[in-house]
Image (cartoon, rainbow, N blue to C red; front, top):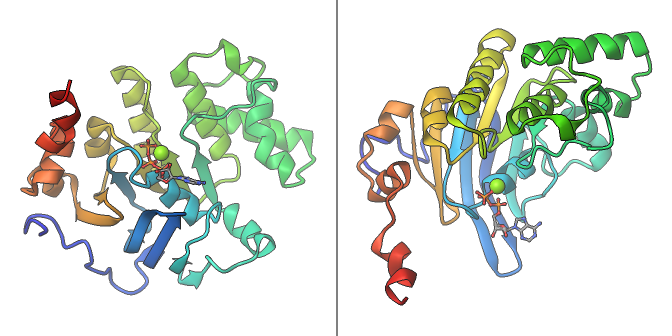
Length: 270
Ligand SMILES: Nc1ncnc2c1ncn2[C@@H]1O[C@H](COP(=O)(O)OP(=O)(O)OP(=O)(O)O)[C@@H](O)[C@H]1O
Ligand SMILES: [Mg+2]
């Protein structure tokens, strides 16, 4: 049962308000059911936080959005256009409208910071060195790292690497940025720098953000809405305040980091 404070997970948004829409999406890997008839509207110009336990399918959700994975059934729409059935070639121009901050940061360690940020531009066939230099400087300055383009990723801190990865995700001026655990592994101050960046990108560049995170401080700070995934479904949806006051025991335990008796069973056997 959904707590009344949480907005019903299956409540639909007004027509046209969703930039991304999942309609009864199912995804499994062999016997493992990750999503079972999942419907979700992602509003434009907002930040949606997706939370849920490890292995629940948060990264899979992001990969479904950009077509790195395809659903087994159901439909995915971007700006009202069905995208899950598009060929790789037809997806190409749509993918350009997304920036993906991957869970592991995934910088190319053999390239300088500048070459990393320039990578998506070169991949798109942009040749002008002057233009590329300008874009690299602009994106590094957005993330507060101007002047480090000649450094190697191995010489950077974890927080700096995340910001370089974010600069790279911004290279093509994306409309939507997908952040997969952007603050994981960072200290609270560096995490907050990332939170402020997410807020800044929404406010100044009107980026729609989808943030996957376990970091509840970050979630409550950046979210316009939060959804919680559990066992293939959305079990709660609401604003930060609504999720904070949600009475659903599973949501409470998750946001306060309290294990259930079931979670602790293995310990009792020790
Ligand atoms: N390509 C794949 N092939 C087979 N199984 C996969 C694949 N991708 C994901 N899975 C499985 O799907 C489930 C969901 O994975 P996913 O990476 O989305 O979890 P997550 O919620 O992002 O977890 P975490 O918080 O640990 O990153 C996991 O059990 C994972 O092992
Ligand atoms: Mg993940």
